[in-house]
Length: 364
Ligand SMILES: NC(=O)C1=CN([C@@H]2O[C@H](COP(=O)(O)OP(=O)(O)OC[C@H]3O[C@@H](n4cnc5c(N)ncnc54)[C@H](O)[C@@H]3O)[C@@H](O)[C@H]2O)C=CC1
Ligand SMILES: CC(=O)C(=O)O
Image (cartoon, rainbow, N blue to C red; front, side):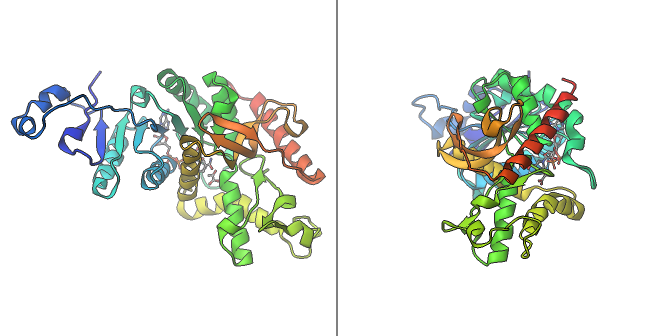
């Protein structure tokens, strides 16, 4: 196997990059014997490579690169490995980031088509696979992306047996279930990006309607990331003031103010962006970065992510859907027991039934 060459000898305390170059390079020791470098440094001890916060991102397409860019510019990690099947694309993305090294804070970035580069990752984010074309639903991608995960997941677990998987590839809830099955990891270490994105879209749209900051609008979308997602109108609040106390019909068909439309817009969001620019990337990249930060910093913060749902809200199937979860260093620590209305509960059950039906048709 070709060596991975870390260029840190040439850029001490700057951003560090490695790539499995097509030509074998001399080992580090040989580079280190260059006269100028020998004159510059008095070696005291070997440098440690482990930063304790390594994240691997599989798939350097629109979503993967938005996630990488968010994580390194927001200081979530300073140790990223990127894996994809397209060697040229990988190298191009690596070089492009490398040219930004003067603007970053000592980030180590590696890229390879070989999964050994992912070894020792605290988190592996999976964004590989096909995306929807205009008019396609997320569920239309299920078998194609299951086949992609069959290649990826065993490799990730082989090289990082203690890792936490964050799945973003669609249909994300089904593929989180597939990853859990393929990985053999405990359920708290397999997480789908789920409705963290839908909830963010919801909060943004509420903020536009109310004329206040997105961060001051509190509310969760649960269930499926996508068409059957469930808005928890009963919990939407501003500074603890529940909108459902002000408008008892909020979110229902009979609401004269038609707040339901806000959720409809959330569901349509991805389709609209895909129609306009071909894909969605920035918001999911930021969402993945937030989830990685929660885990790496052991934040015990609450996020709507896709998790193992059997036993919650009387769901009997082995499905992964989003509920608000406490995320920390070991993955999902708690599922928040939201009190749901009868309508919200029955919508969640419909999502679960749909997931179970789709899962039954998957060829592993
Ligand atoms: N969960 C969410 O909220 C969101 C999920 N997505 C999903 O994320 C996925 C990726 O979307 P984009 O980045 O836009 O697609 P893209 O086509 O830009 O990138 C996909 C990448 O996966 C790579 N890939 C394919 N097979 C692979 C394999 N076996 N091993 C390693 N890499 C492989 C491709 O070479 C490509 O670079 C899609 O399934 C999309 O639907 C997209 C947006 C939001
Ligand atoms: C594509 C997708 O899943 C999203 O942007 O919500």
